[in-house]
Image (cartoon, rainbow, N blue to C red; front, side):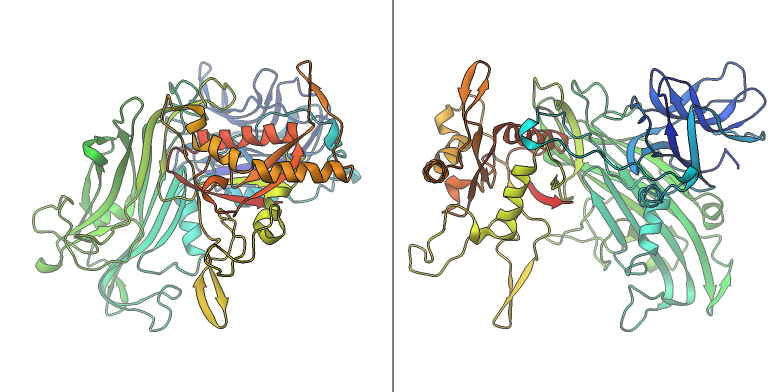
Length: 612
């Protein structure tokens, strides 16, 4: 395998000890292995590479600080993306960490060794000369182990709910589109691979845009132009892909979650122009190779705040040169002030030179429908007109990151984060698992409130104050249908509505806060439900907490008390249920961690999802 190119190494393992320096796979040069997938006693599972084939070379990559399981089968995978300069380490299909690595990789010409230093078993070793996606890794992690007649480890029976103590918060995962190759694959496997806007995959900490730009005379499919390729006559086409990553600050904001040399106010941008082909009467030609294309990234801050491109330069070159190397990297930095928040618009643009004088073009590389219109604050080279850039009130849908330098969950070491940038148009989704036994009672309540709101407590009167029929509506479900049909007519589903977080200004009197008002509003319903449980002998004995006797159950509510959708403003469209107090407390910590990790501040929208 060539170690100076992208590759993936994965295996199923069953170790009897976790304290050794183990090698699952490595490929050696004269003095050093080019990479090692394995384990160390002090850093747990690792996926590293060496800087050179010399005796004093240094190691970089992923040091996960995650201990491997012992006496059970587990799946580990290491992915090196030579284009994105990243190394990623997966455990049981989940990304542990991804690190950006500097320097040029080198090719080790020695033999690859598999499972040479470890205590235990290895099976189903997979080697690819390409960077597999997270979906690919997940599929590998679901392959049953056949070696030695063993089976995949099944989890032990869960602890009874009443015996639970509060657990640690779930780990944070950026959940990104990792590379331009991954982004291109997403477009190529979709039904929109040829559409004019192109493909877009937008997540809180990553953006992916991939499209085909056609220049000259082309004939598009008459009924489904997004699914079928246009037919060329005279002209050329360029496949353009852009991937951006933003970052979450550590507790003090001095670095970012996941490590590396990035900062929470930065956005990394990768661009790729490829598969450039010219046509003359429908036949491939090199006639367009002298034309020049210019790629640049333009940025603009909101409210007068500064955004800058601090790494990467505008590149202008002939098409023949773009064919040889169409890859570029950029770094955008927000100058957001301490305690503040602002938006930064990032516009990757491709300009054409040497075409017909009145048809030289500026093309947006993000996903949008293109039409002729000049946008005033786009900087155009002399003689270039903007194609596909809007003016006035027409939205350009350019990528926008919302950067802040604020402290969330201050004083809570397990969830405090200072600073970060998120893609403001991405859905931020608070995901709760039905299988999470630590909070399952709360998840069941919210699940049933979303799926069967009319069966929740308190009961909503059949008519409103004006005598009109009404039924209970629960907002926030990202998986709710956006439209409903009534008597053959299609309407917007009123339940398909996001939640909006609310925070009160510092110094607000407690009884004036919206959280207090929301909790006060559920009081009457909670008291009636508590009386019912006691009357039906379903109310458990008190428990001792910090030397005090307190109720084992607490009155949980949905929508959350920290939102503007809560009981105070809901006109009865809320649900309450008594649940175990420990589970209720831990669920509150989960929600606070979600707010911190995804920078959900005052007036910010978010959704909820219940998953298996």
